[in-house]
Image (cartoon, rainbow, N blue to C red):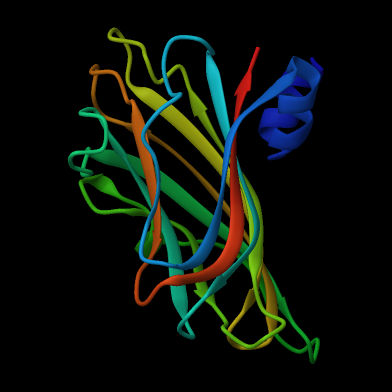
Length: 196
């Protein structure tokens, strides 16, 4: 029952910790155009988890996003079907909301999937979160993912994004790439874990 509660309420961290995590690799951004994980995604684990820690964009109003590859990172652009929700509250306390973000979902598009949109680039602004990718090595099923992020939005607001969807392919996903929509990822760490 706890497993279903964690999924339903977006508590993917609890789901991961309950199953056991193994750190596979970690990358630290430094004015990076892209951050790619092109090894270590295979049949060893059923679930792979990516943790973003204080991802900070070069440019204001940037979108942190990701895509998958089935050819080891030679190209990224697998069709994605996804949904996106957000909750937000500004520092003044006079603007809050919880809504479906239809402009952030993908309808079998090969575009990069939004994870955090509108991150500010002030010195104290950044975003963190987690992405789960389920059984990417399967050659039978599509590849589901869930993401939960929290970030300091450009308009001085706290925002949480919940995204979920699937890569519409039965080919194995063996590489994942992250990048900003405009400019580089100025700093931040992305860790990749295998979950037993």
